[in-house]
Image (cartoon, rainbow, N blue to C red; front, side, top):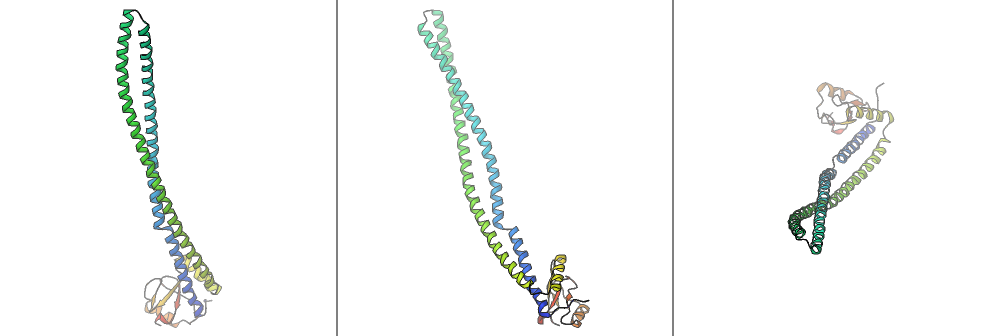
Length: 246
């Protein structure tokens, strides 16, 4: 048996379709928020900087370790110089004195070389520390930007969620006024074809944007006002109003 429904009940489907369209738009906006893209981009940038910070931390630690080794080498040479000087002062052997003096000269050269190395390593360690400090400052600044971006994203999502709740409440109200069999047909067609109701305006179906041909238009004109019709192009429930041009 063909489905029938009062024209005013059928017209409710246009309100329902408008709300469903709005809900789809809200869902799309929620999934494509510019604010969310900003958070994603900043987070990716932070990950790259964090990797750099980890590498620089390793380099800074290696430089400090090398500096400690060089300082230890200088301390060893200083200890040998102090020992040889003490032995030199207590020695009475000319041969031993000459040997100590020669060794002290060699140790002095060795210490000079080590101090040059120590200075270079110290400068390298300071440079590594400065690089790491700059990167950490960059991370801190980026964390502030991310926090701001997250707050903006969450505020946008909250606003969309409020709009969605309002639209859902309105939809429930409208759906409650639609006869069950007509509502079931609308839901079925919307699930299958994406649109559940289409306004016929000036002979054109709003869902498909296509004008009905003369045969289809004749069938619509011949149908009873309470007959539930489907758009031949979109398969949505075709709603006739004073704008339909019949």
